[in-house]
View 1: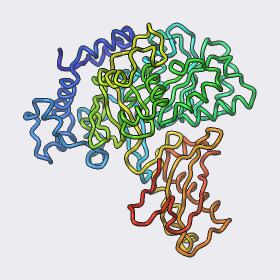
View 2 (view 1 turned 180 degrees about the vertical axis):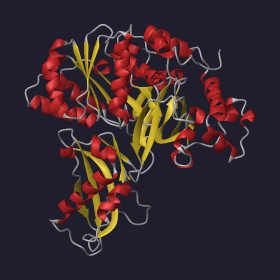
View 3 (view 1 turned 180 degrees about the horizontal axis):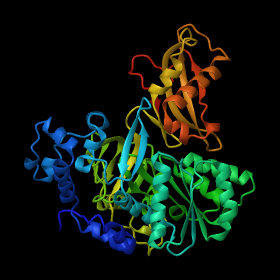
View 4 (view 1 turned 90 degrees about the vertical axis):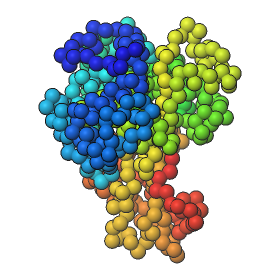
Length: 501
């Protein structure tokens, strides 16, 4: 096996558009992932000034990192000890921004942005993940397809990254038209009414709760979704299989494993993995067998379950959280992405399923002739730090604290709160914040809406993702006021957690 997979930069685009998906994936599978990530480490040690300094400051001699077991002993890279510790150009290959022609931005806990430059070379690797979805799930190589990008447009990674990857598929020969209304429902409906009838299928790409909003609001405005053979691509949040089924019913879907797919992506790493018909079938089976799911994942809740290419994005685990390495303008080498989850090889997954009595693909609800791709799995519960994801925006307790720490509230509130996403009876998500009152204070009916307005104002001021991802009508949190030391949210004698999932 070769040590790594590389192509000359001037030929990578031609290689992508001229090479069928099966061949691309076969090329990657011919590479040893451990050798590949070790080669990435040595390239970064030689070509990325910040990483070289990062190693030197910790007494690491790159020449001594000669095997994968030794590589696994390297200190984890994180936002705090690396991304925020070294200037952006020094974190890039070659120590310069030259050669990188696009950039994405992610918000930090205080609203301080982190910039992630990239080039088309890095996009093409991610475009393969989109191609897996459009080819394997939607058969878009055979059907004229309208792709409607419903992610927020701008510097944020979701919208333009998705648009660009879809354009690459169109350039490759997929009969695909890409429309970019962003998260503007009126514009989305205009696109659907005018263009969708001209295509064999329509794909909506966006954050799960927003896509649901689009489907529900569109139906209320008379759009017959089933007429357009809709397909759905999600990113940013974990959802239940009951929720997937609900949306499937509303769009007339009869094939949940092939009519939707979720992407596991981050601003820093791009798309790290994608749902496949196989992973969805497994997840739906696990949803109906909660004891098996708890045995596999260690929790009674279902994580997002995707397959990934270990040569493109190499996963490890560290104390129940995910670590990723991958080529990028700002390369990631054992980067701690603070997501709670784990990894399973293809064989480990099949072994587990057979232990549970699943003998064939048909037992998972797939046709006997379906051939799953031999790729490993990564499962993701969500952020392991103190954030919640709402319409794809990371909501930080620090932002909420500022909204509560206003002079008008100090005589009423303890300062403790619990941030969570709850689901209404109709399946809509909303941002709920439980707020603790000071001892002896009785809830005042007029206080909750004032607190809600204050928190929204600070979220809009401090968190650009919240401002641009969350629809205006969903930005006002729902506040409930609770007595001091309330047993449900603020029990005494235990460490307080500011988020709940």
